[in-house]
Length: 444
Image (cartoon, rainbow, N blue to C red; front, side):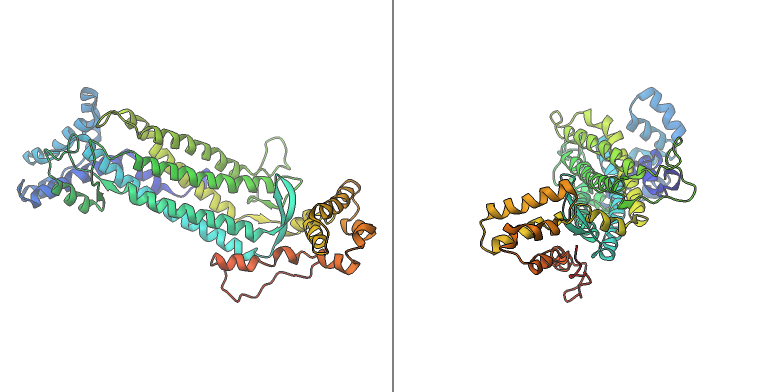
């Protein structure tokens, strides 16, 4: 799958070239703002716009200064004439670095929003297509009552819609710049310059800052990515479970010529979903680091800076890759509806136990007595493999209250699925008045 990964945009966003290009973009925007209020001559702007980053020269200077911003400024200044004196006027390093980083985060978030919307579309299409594909629901890993595969997909699509909302909110909170000077007092650069510059860059101006943009914004962004990653892990874990040999209700795509094991030619492993699960753990680790970055000394220290060079690019790259992989899994997912039906019937009709108990209660029994009668027959059915319905029909204590026709009516999968359309209508996946296609008279 790595070789088929076709999203180089995210890698480009977090490249050194784009980072330093963004630094220069911020510097030029500040100069344009200074020129707009008359602090520097407007005639200087065309020359300033000719500035570029000489990466080789920057590296040479960095070996001397050990400060990437001063190395950047010196290298850029050498590419133009005396107008270079206007670059970085009144600014501190974080004015440029944090504002430029906001531009990178904004670009990355836009890609992730696009990814998320695509996955939602795929999940909703699967939900509608399999609205009536009946399967067993499991709690604690044990057979519970029937659901449909479409309900499972609808549940996932709604979770991803919540994630989309979270990401949109984080996108807004991270799309913020600051041009407020050394400790956020605007002593060397007035608020007007910040407003003009941020407007030029398509950012909001932080209403207040110290030397940096406050890291709760970044923590919200990274933890949002971790939440989305955890949702993907949840979905991928389910597919891994459904692909187990003894269940085999769904499988990852498996192309011609693909191999699952170097030793065992028969293997078809859910390795893509396993990859998603592994990367989700990485995201949660980065989320913890982003939370640690909120508490800095006084108006700022540099303890956040080193790890952000890892956690921000890595989180965006990892999630972009995870969503890409999982969307491909869902697009090509092999769904074995006949196996779902067969597994549903593995417990000899025990899925109807609650319906039997409630029917006995409706006939006047206490809930405790109804539970005892139902459990007694359910246990025997499980131990002997005898159909649950047959045992109930032979149990005189049950037959005092439920006739053969009563029992036959209870053993109808349609009872479990009668409100599926209502759920889909709530979610907006089908319109009200949609004609139900579930076979409500299907007997066990």
